[in-house]
Image (tube, rainbow, N blue to C red; front, side, top):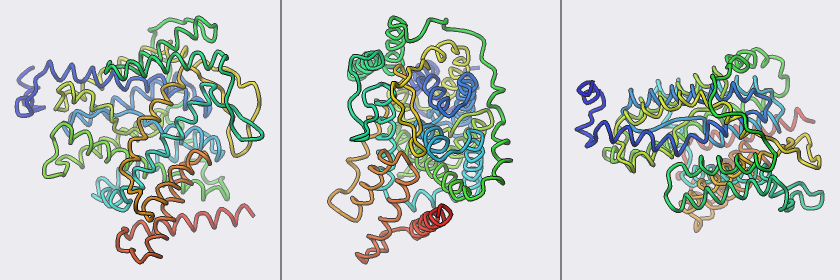
Length: 462
């Protein structure tokens, strides 16, 4: 067995061994398994069955991660992307009014397109088309949106007729639970304790039980049925013909889902493999296999009922522990399958607290408070702020489009609009300053397409 593992994963060649790889896999899993509890709550806000989403989360993550380990031999784990799930639930299903079945249908199309681009060797062209400043701004904007949702879910901010948002009641159970959970996460994080987010979630759960916000329901049980969400994307696809004028929004949704997946995956792959010393002359030797694994993971995940599967930056924790081969990823995939048996924890952590005032509008979806999960969203949002330092703030043709991208996402509650404003303004500023050669031709095409989408949407709305 050990000889087969050595030959399959090239352990000696990569300077690692079986024990190190298993420990690295466990470390990576502990730093990212919070998604098992967080993703069902986020997608549950769109009306999806939380137990079924948990199963889909574990299956999609396990399949994508296993393929990454076996095909690419990289110690990189995958799971439903934070930001992708928020876009799915709060923007596509919330603000834009699509059903979650239709959102899954759009996600299936984007995942299939990604797979086609990978097999055709064209995915890199889309990555090259977007300037680095906008790539970083998109990540930062999504982080701000996640943090805003977390602050609302934790009760820290509430609706105000005068100022849109204002400080919430700091003595409310939601704020108390979220504050304690967040403090535990942050303290453990700065002390370099593995699994800080998961431990913080458990701390918040204990406080929630003590305050009567949720009840203890056990820890381990048989996996829930995935039937409520499995293959429901087909219903969404079948309903697209009746969308009428909303087909314009559908195109934008598919486009954004595709781009987010490509950006996230490529960025994470380069960053994590660089840390592991797996890059050769600055390039990724198994890029096609890696992207193929991601695309298949997304398609499989959507089939069972979850949003886009993407590579996780938390994989760097396992690499820091010595993980260098795909065996690390295989270990993570096995642990995700074991996560299927923790449904009671998901049910307890998804406890809702009713918002005391109604602020739902057509543009802004209603929010129930989820104080146990809220700290994780806030902290992940903070993690995504690091891209700010890579934006060229001294070059206004780079800085202004980046600023528009990252600020418009949280204030309009729309990742789509943020990307659109960023692309359009970037193309415009490069043209008026006669620096048009600095932008990829595909970016100009995408900017024009966004303008057309805005024009058509305005015309149909009128």
